[in-house]
Image (cartoon, rainbow, N blue to C red; front, top):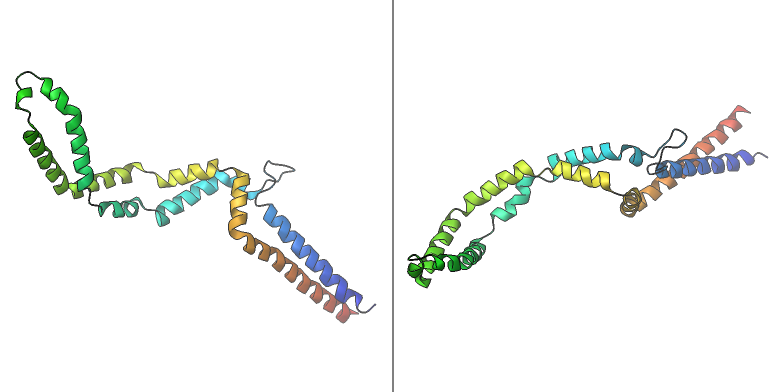
Length: 196
């Protein structure tokens, strides 16, 4: 029976290592509700994880000024012309109804006015976009948005996303648990043989 420890200890060690890691990975998400004094890491700390992830995203990953930079490169002259045309079209009827003033409103006057306003808007586009950027920076709370999204995320969906993204890595953790358990079993078998 000299061979028994060399087979039994590594097999038991590998089984224990694999099953222990398998259980540890499942305990990231389960149990969902507190049972026997235990609750999965993500269900228990979902709010805190959301807050910290939100802080990291807002501080290091998604900055409002970086999000707005491509917008600042846009040429908005066509959009300005469209807005002014719409405003003029909406108001021209009202203005023509005003006694005395209505007779002076001609298409040439309206086109000249529109062109001046559009030129001014184009000239001030950078200033307008800087103001929009400043207001966005003051009023867009990326950390809070991320925190709310994570806090509201269904745990089944969160688990599915983590498994989808990290399936191979989680499987590798389980396998490495088995491999390490196997090695520990071999060491135990060697120690048992040496002690005898």
